Structure formats: structure tokens, C-alpha cells
Length: 217
Image 1 (spheres, rainbow, N blue to C red):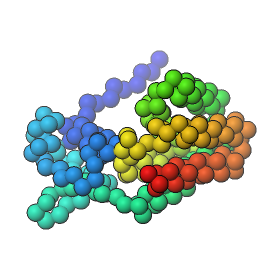
Image 2 (image 1 turned 180 degrees about the horizontal axis):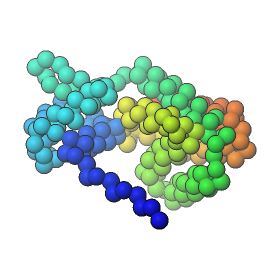
Image 3 (image 1 turned 90 degrees about the vertical axis):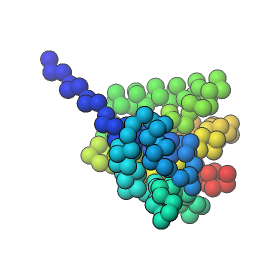
């Protein structure tokens, strides 16, 4: 029986990149923060060289910028970027949902339903801090099912390009939690019915409403 090849350990540059990406994505390092290679190296226990490599990657991702006499700074995104981000997400994830409706397997659907049930339980028991990451996983799984060649990767890249502070998460708002979970329920029903048009429509409106909430907060 074939066995999967063990994954090679992360290089130091990859490790630094992943740590900084997660910290920027979740706004633990907020926009406008200066990133000094030496300070990052000391904090993460590596030399300056892999930190510089990671910073170059983050610059290509447009998450940091370089300014004369200031070095690397985390990009501070404004209201126009918020609108563009959620608009792009709506298009990409909507397409993913439409394609997923024609490609989803019984196992895929069962896994999504299990994740949705876990979210409902967490919401009922007040574990709202878990919901944001589970929702991200729910959306990306659908994108992966709909576009396994590259759409899922693109959806991931779009999400990683915009920081969402934990304190700004709509999943901390009880009214929003119900609206979001109802949308997930509708998406699941459309996927189960192989109704791509409905899945796309619900996903687009779902993402746009999240954007409206974010702009208002």
C-alpha cells in the first residue's frame, strides 16, 4: 500500500513568513507597524537572513511596503480596500460555490455539514472566538471543491491579503452569527441540490453583507 511522502521541515525563511503572515492577517501586527528585521529575528530565534527573505515575500504579497529611512512597514488599508477586498471575495467564492455544486461528493458534503454543525454548537455554547476560523475553513473548502486546480488557492491568497482584527470579527455579534449561519445553511442546501446558480447567489450576498458589516465597524 503506497504511503505519502513525509513533508520536509519548513525552512527558516518559510517559518518566519508563515508566522508574520498569520500575525498580519489577524491584525496582531496592525497596519502601520514598522517591522525591523533584527527585532523579528530575535523574537523568532533566527538570523536576520531568513527574516529578510520573508519580508521580501510579504512585500510581493503587498502586505508590507518599504519606505526610505523607515524600512518595512505593514500596509494600512482603508475603506476603499475593504470594499475591493469583499467585492473580490464575493466574485471568487461565488464562482467556487457555483462550480462546487456540480462537483461536490457525498463525502465532501458530509464534511461541510459536520463543520457547520460544529459551528452551531459553538455558537449555542458561546464559543464565538472559534467561529471566525471555522467559517474561513468552510468557505475555503467550498472553493477547493469548486476549483481544485487553482481557484481554491486564489481564494486563500485573497483572504490572506487583508488583515481582519479578532476584535472586529462579525462572529462576536450575536445577530450576525445567526445571519451568517443561516447563509451557510442555505449554501449547503444549494450544494446538496446541485443548484449552482443558487449556491453562487447566496455566497455572493453572504460575503457582501459581511463587507457591509465590516465597513460599518
